[in-house]
Image 1 (cartoon, rainbow, N blue to C red):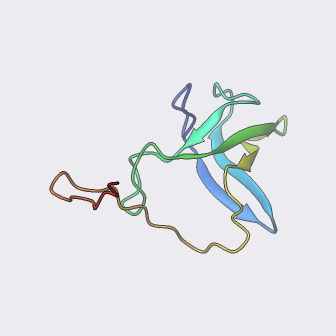
Image 2: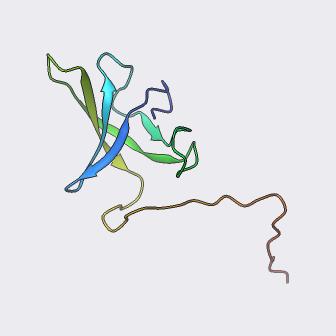
Image 3: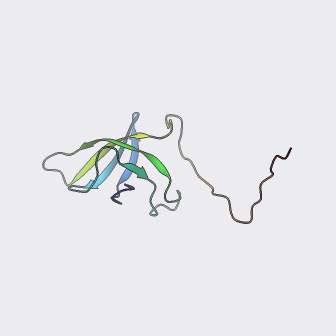
Length: 97
């Protein structure tokens, strides 16, 4: 999802190229926008930064457009990542002098 305009699409990586696809034609998305996870997924928590839009691709007669993006992490070896935020009950050890 586009953090600035809230436009949604599908994030995917094909042969090393990271793309946001299925973006409705005419949507407000531009180079430099930050992509984040949305609340649609039941696997990934919402609001985590994914990458920055580099280029918009749109065919003149297409219903959808796509955006190439630069991911914030090297995803070449990842299959799936689960982020578990700490709960309020958890306590962490601290280092004291």
